[in-house]
Length: 350
Image (cartoon, rainbow, N blue to C red; front, side):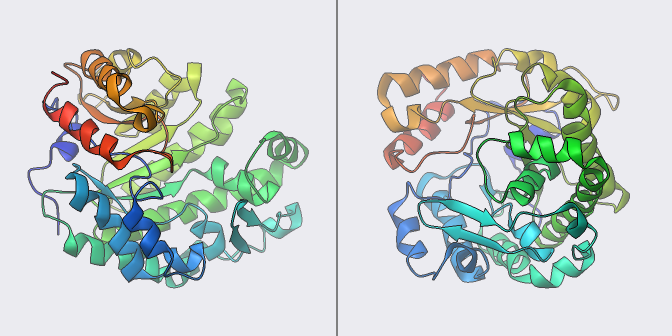
């Protein structure tokens, strides 16, 4: 079922909405006691992601509690390499651990089309969540950007991306082959989420920081542009948000060349740039922006939170903008501060 009368979707279409819609990255997460209670029912994190009833429940929790303007399906970006046949584990206190891929193994990855059966529980969770959400609350489906997912696959974990860059320099053909597979897999994955009920999509490029401009265009801009084009070629016209964290001076080029409908702006970027990014595109529509409140104000609350919301509303007045954080909400955030964030946005931080 498509969402109706959604300010969030109107913003993604280039419309200025007042008050602006608000949702928060990682809003279904460990800062909520009800999330932790559900998490305890799963034997491990991947089992959590692949159990539709559990994934649906935690996706709905922040909507019930805070009345946010958009919902994002509970899952993880690393279900894609898992679906392509790579070993993926989530270790307590350590995070995701993968078996590092070798150049020779790139050609032996599973075909993206075969991934759909493996990830069927994810798409079922999208469907059941969409059915349970209020009709005016859109559901966001997401994936990790090819460069971000590739770095996990190459290094076997997160952290410093220097080893992934070195691997790419040493193995340019294998690197391009890996990006090609991840582009196709991302298109398949996102299209399946739309078919199951997602009304918007977000691509998380978590590791755009520190890349030389030419490498940024090759590893970040080109793959995401191909994902957007691939979706459109399949007839998927669902709006796409991209969050290129750390893009810095590359942000304007990213916005101009990827074809996305909205740009997520990170905490370190001046939100005043939203006005420059929002200039009309080739189709005449304004590019929407999203972000970029510091997640730490959700820990501290009080005047710091009030000031952050006030600055955000002032900087984005008159442009299509979604209020969000500049990165995911942290486990030590106070749920009361999420409620206050929503209240402040809807009351104009008065």
